[in-house]
Every structure is written in structure tokens, then in C-alpha cells.
Length: 219
Image 1: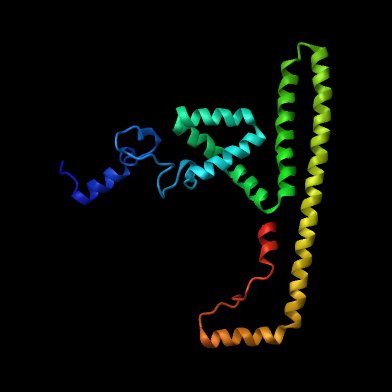
Image 2 (image 1 turned 180 degrees about the vertical axis):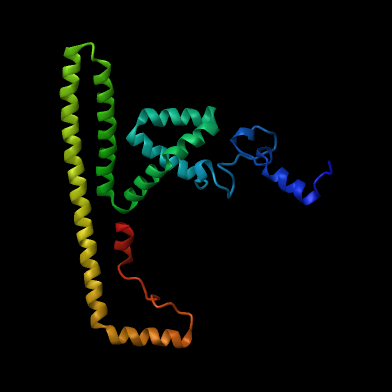
């Protein structure tokens, strides 16, 4: 069989797992440690996380589930590849929560309680099913589970009310912007005309953003 030309051989070598340093091969001498590939995509095609990103996510997990946080720290030391996979699997929810924490601390507190309530209801439900052979224990767990579900439902209603209030504020901001633009119609037309005369490729929506701080918080 005729060997492939050098260019093809190099491409094949680049595609092999051995040629890409990961946690599976970081024990090779002289090879630097890399997290999910420098500039590459990691597990589940997620972006590479810095050590600061990982620390922030673990701090969040400490708040949500201290036992899980401890298990992940052990994995990070003993099985780095598995740690990456476990973190990648949970990444979307944690990044979502951290974004809420930055832009809406009050909503973040509600969402943290929501996660904790969900974990407690699942735990109680599992305990209830495990105690079916013990009617007295099962009855007590059912009562506890019912109270937890009711509390969780009340919290969810509070979250929905807060979200609705935020949407109403955003809607009023948009209405105010629409009124301002209608009142200043001629000036805006002339301003955009001047831009087109200077730069023909100026898009029709090329206008300075308004109330960007509130928009960032609401997105």
C-alpha cells in the first residue's frame, strides 16, 4: 500500500487523541497541564474554563450542595478527566446561576432556595419509597414531603411574581423609548441621513443603545 503523502500523514497524526494533551496524558514529563485544551473546546463542546472559573463554580456548589462540592474536589485531584466531565455536565445551570448572581442578587437568592427545595423534595421522596415496609415511618415522611412541596410551590410563585415585575418594568422602559423616538423623529432621521452620507454601509439600526444597564440585567 502506498503511504499517504506527508501532508495527509500530518493531518492524521494531528487528529489522534495522543497528539492532543489532555488530563489523560498530563503525567508525561515536560508536558504542561491544560484544562480542556488551550483555546480548544472541552467536554460536551463547552469552552475552556480557567482556574478562576472553576473556583467560582465550586464556590457556588459549596452553597448549593457542600457534599457534592467535596466529591468534586476529590475528583479534581484524583481523576481530573472525570472531574472535567462532571463539571461540564453541570456547567449550563451553574453559569446561568452565576450570571443571575452578578446582575440580580435578589433573584439569585430565590433561585438558590429553589435548587435546595428541589433537592430536599427528591431526597424525601426517595426516603418515602424506601420506607414502604414501615407504614409509620412512611406516613411521617409523606407529611414532611407534603410540607416541603407546599413550601417549594410558594417559592416558585414568588419567583414568578418577581419575574413578572421585572418584565413589566422592561416593558415600560421600551414604551418610554418608543415615545421618545416618536417625539424626536425628525432629528433621528436627519442624524441617520448624515451617517449614511459619511458611511454608505451604515445599517438602519445603527443608533446608540439606550438604558443598556437595565437591558443587561433583564436578559
